[in-house]
Length: 169
Ligand SMILES: [Zn+2]
Ligand SMILES: [Zn+2]
Image 1: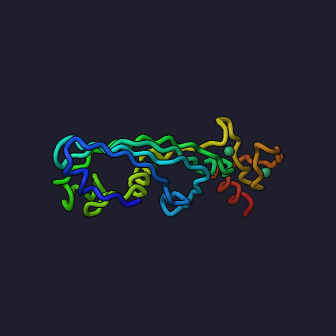
Image 2: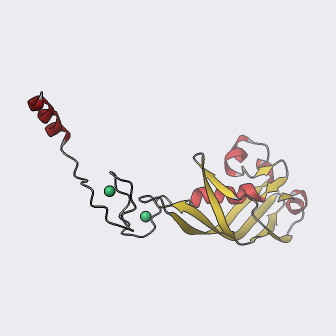
Image 3: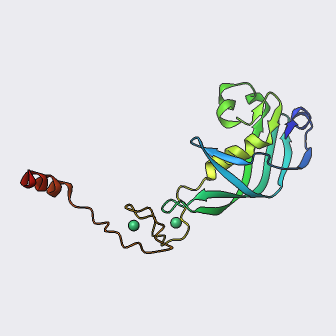
């Protein structure tokens, strides 16, 4: 949703409550796509604190599907996002705004960009399907949580392997 900030910036003491939805179907992180499988509504409160100063507060909960870091099984990861920003009219169009208010273009607040920004900040570093996930067998590719494959996963010391080659030559 695009929300025009002109009015709230100029109306001292004004409070505006908005409810909208976050539209994107996927989260794109480092050119990988992660589906958003559940989404709550986005509620925002904009409060004019002084002329040209608006405080923004809001929250949204989403559930993203992220593959387990060891076995790649999709894991449903809830993201509870709390938004809090200070919007300053005098920053609009300045280079600092590109960093700090990247979700504001001209006087338009882009709520999808705002939430997208918050998702990036809160993205989990490491996702596991369970704490003791055994991962995938490096030999046969089986998910070791489901089945023991019995492969010999012993990795010989590479220096020994070189010696072995010499003796076999
Ligand atoms: Zn796993
Ligand atoms: Zn195996």
